[in-house]
Length: 531
Image: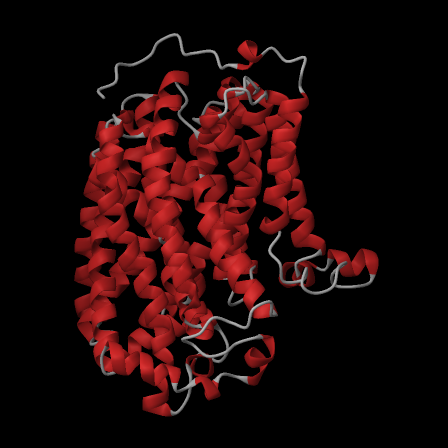
C-alpha cells in the first residue's frame, strides 16, 4: 500500500467518524439517550446500524473464507438472514419489542425480560450471560479486522488489535448508542459500496455469472480429499446429506446463526430506538438490501475465489491461504482488486469491525452497569458510571481473547454465540411478546436450561469445541462422550427444543400462579408514542 495515499484517506475517514461520534455525544443528555437513543432514531439509520452491527468482519472475512472452503451452501444462511434477521426481526418481533420496552420503560434486553416476568433474577442472570459469554464473539470480530490490516497493510497483528480496540472504546464511552448508531450508518454505506464493487469485479474476473458458476462446478475433483471424506461434493453443491460436513454446515453455520439472530441482545435493542411501528416497517427494505449485498456477496465471492486462484496459479483458495480460512478473503482482495479498491475495502472492513464491536461493547457495558450492578443496587457505591467501567472491561476481555483464540476460529465462534443466545433467550422472548400466560418460573427454568445444555454440549459433545477445550478428555479420557453424528450436531439442535419444552411445560404446570399477577407492572410514566 502507498501510505502517502492511505494515511490521508484514513484521516478523512476517522475525522468523519469522530465528528459523528461527537454529534452523538452532544445529543446524549439523558440515560435514555445513552441506552436507546431517546427512542427517536430515524428508521434508515436504525436499519443501517442494525445491518452494520449484524454484518461484521466475521461475515465478510470469516464466513467468506468458510464459503471458499465449503461452497455455495452457505447462501442458505444469507436467505435466513434476510427472512428471519430482517423481516421477522423488524416487522414481527421488532414491533412487539418496541411496544413492550416502552410500556415497561425498559432500556436493555435483560431489563425487558426481567420486567416482563417481574424477576430481578432474570435481569441479572441474562446480564451475566451477556457480559461473560459475549466477549468470545467480540474478540473474533476484532480478529477479523486485525487479520485484514495484517495482510493488506503489513501491520503487526497485535498492534492492529490495540488500535482498533482503543478507537472503539473512545466512541462507546463518550457517546453511547447514538454515537454508535451514527457511526454505524456511515460505515454501512461504505460497506455497501465496497461489497457491491467487490462482487461485480469478482464475477468479471471469472468470466461472468454463467461461466463462473459452470467453471467452479467443473472443479469439484479438486476438492481436498479430507473434505471429500467429510461429505464435500463440490463448491456448487450441498454436502452429502447426513455427513459430518452436512451437519456442520446446516446445524452450526446455517441454523445456528440464522435462527440465533432473533435472540441477539445487541440487535433487539435497535428496535427500542425508533418512535413507532411505521419506522420499523420502513426499515425492512433498507435492511434487506444491505444484508443481501453483505452476506449474499460474501458467500458468492468466497467460492468463486477458488476458480480465480486456480486459473492464475493452479491452486485452490485453501492452499493459497495455507489452510487458514480467515486469510482467504484478504489474500483474494490483494491479488484481484486494484490498489484504489484496497483503500476502499480497508475502510469497509474498518467500518464493519468498528460498527459491530462498538455495539457489542455497548451491550456488554449496559449489561454490567444497568442489568447487573444497578439491579443489585451496587452502582451507588461506584464513583464512575458503571456502564463506562463495563466498556473498559469488555474491551480488555476482547483483546485478551483475540490473542488466545486459535486461527480460523471466526465463523465457529460466531455460531457459538448466536446458537447459545437462541437456546437461552429465544423461548422466553417469544413468550414475553406473545404468550400472556407464560410465568416467571417457566422463564427462569427455560433460560437456565438453554444456557446449561448449550454449554454442556460444547464442552462434552460437539467435537470442535470439546477437543479444543479438553475438559471431556481430562475427566473422562475421551474427546467427546457421544459418537457421530452428535460430535457434529450443534448444541442448538437439542438445547433450543429442550428449553422450549421446559418453558411450555412449567408454564402449563404452574397452576398456583395467578395469571394476572404474572403480568408486568407498567411503568409509572409512559412516554407519548406516535403511531
